[in-house]
Image (cartoon, rainbow, N blue to C red; front, side, top):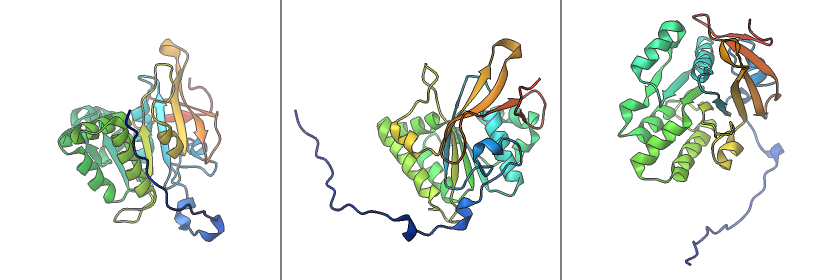
Length: 252
C-alpha cells in the first residue's frame, strides 16, 4: 500500500487578539427591520463577513423566506445577490408575481452558465456584495465539480475558500460579504455536509413544520449561532402576497 505524502508544516505562529485591528463596519449588523432580525443575532440582523447555512423540510418555504430577507436588506440600501442553482427565469417569475419586491433582486441564474459555472461565480463575487444568497449549496457544488472533473471534496473546498476570501473583503469593493446558503438534509433531518462547512458556519438554521396537514405551522429556529441565541422560534406565514409575515406566536 502506497502512503500519500503529507504536507510539511515549517513553522507555527500564534495570534494575540490585542494585536489585531478590524474595520468597525464588521460589527454593524445588516438589518431587515422585521422581527426575524432578533434571532439572527443578539444585536439584530446579519453581521458582515459571516456565513449562515439553512436547511428545511420540503415545501416549508426556504427560498421564499430567504428571498424575502434578501429583498428587505436591499430595501435598506445593501448590495445583494441571489445565486439560483435550481430555478430558471420562468420559475422565478412566479415568485416575483406573488412578491413584487423580488423583481428588483439581481440574480445569477446558474443554468445560463452550465459550461462555465466556476468563472461565473468568481466574477460575480468579485463585484462585491453585502449579502449573497445561494440556493442551493449542493447544486452549485455539483455544477462546479462536473465542470472541472473534481471530487466533491475539491469542489466544496473551492467554494469554502472563495467564501472565506470574500468574508475578508477580497473583492473590488472591499466589502466583507455575508453568505446565506440553503443546504440539503440527511434522511434523518440533519445537516448534510462536511465538518469544514460546519466549522466555517457562523449560524445554522432550520425551517420546519409544526404539525401536519393544512393546520401545520411554519417556523425558523437556530441550532447554532455564534452571534445570537439558539432554540427561539419565529413563526412565519406565506399566505398573504407581498411580504412574509413573522410572529413569535403561532400564526393563526
